[in-house]
Length: 498
Image 1 (cartoon, rainbow, N blue to C red):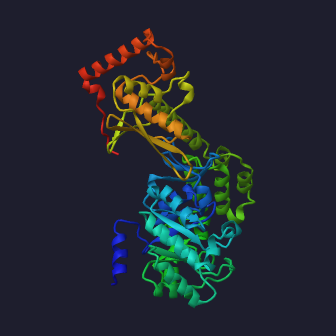
Image 2: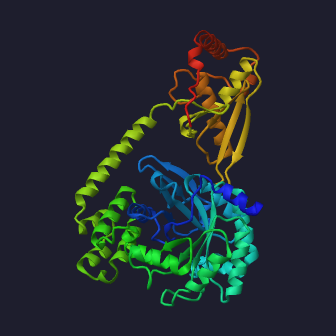
Image 3: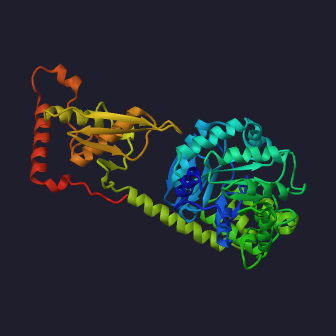
């Protein structure tokens, strides 16, 4: 074994394995969370997300959805572009459409801690993918393919894969896959058709077999759903026909995800009900729910159930056609109860958490809560002056994907930061000042605070002599300092496990 292969083997330890697996293929509009979870339930080893375009994903913000117990990647217009959960974390592959190495890396780093692997779409022939040089358009630009994959392999901690179609000649196809292998990817999925061919054209198993023999990384065969894969047993037959390590199933899984079930197919009606339960549980968009259910209905889409489904506008209306009204009401009640409980918890001040050498709290600066000329930063600055301490120092970083800001303030050698990101550098600094003030037990200038009689720099300069207000402020801070020295337990910060 060469040194390069030894390194590749070492890097796969503890990571997602692509050998001897059955995978749900990436399918636009189909590969959303309900279908992925249902496929895992029925026996899929790996599930791919639908293709998500890098430009859109780069604008998303990662949001922990405590009500649904999911991680959402939310666009500026509040649309959830990608939703995942703990159940699939170790088996979901995030597929992106990209034609730019740097942008691909931004997106990969955004999602890498919530997925098992990153995949690049290099095979989709549809216009929404090929425009801008993505999808199958990349097949004619192997240099760009190499640049994208090398950038990702070197830039993220999770395995990187890609999905391609075959080229017009076997020689060109093998040349391309060998270049792809040399980038260090963990596996390559091959749809055994040319970019101009469609499902009605036979899949070229001989090309996939030649690829599998030419490279040492796992090859995942794709393209057999229409005429070769109709049930679970057919998956193994297709794998042997192609000589591939694994099989990726698309249309057969779209029509009935129980194709992954080793005990045999379930009725479409039963599968649709289970799908709909996931859609309700994870608040799937109603139009996406309708689309996926219609794909399962296939030629029955004009049946009474199909017509009722097509006329439905909400998930609740969809449930009526399947007799799941009570399930819908029960699930909504559970989610509402969880929402109210979370809201109640958030109304209580968060406990400080020690993250390395930085004390953090979940704090957001709301300008309306700090009326007048005073702000948390001003309170912290004035306190440092009165105590003859070094003035607070702020360090701010900006997140590339949504240009949000996060600041850390250093005060008396200790660091403080809010875990939340702000829309501006100014607000981020204010949030970090609030964390510092709350940990120290000092006033921060909130409306209705018991004491907020701080005199700012401008007013102080207007007066040549100390005013009663200044005396009050000095007395307050002095008394507070003595109180903290006599009661050191108030200054402690709990070091919670991350």
